[in-house]
Image 1: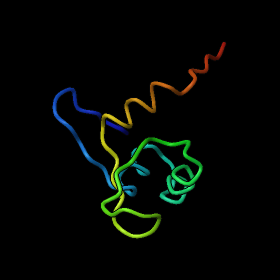
Image 2 (image 1 turned 90 degrees about the horizontal axis):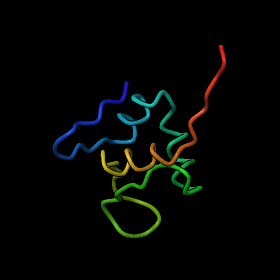
Image 3 (image 1 turned 90 degrees about the vertical axis):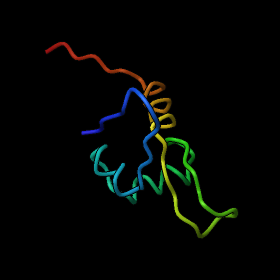
Image 4 (image 1 turned 60 degrees about the vertical axis):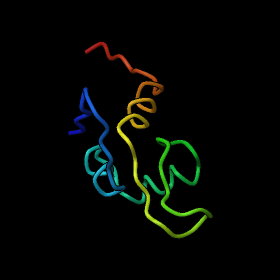
Amino acid sequence: MLTIPHEGLTIWSPDELAEALGVSAATLADWRTARTGPEFIRTTTGQRGGRVYYTSTAVTAWLSKLPVTHTNN
């Protein structure tokens, strides 16, 4: 389960965020390439190399933009 703190900033690695969202790290990588997932921080400039991190602020913003689906069960 993804827990976002009310105060302060949390940073997740792709593996940590993938586990919390119930997707694979490869899915997050695909979303980064397609620019459809949460914004991320890369520790180096350029396309390759460096580490990738996600902030709680970016994940919250991304989640709030996703459509909400209602079911009538």
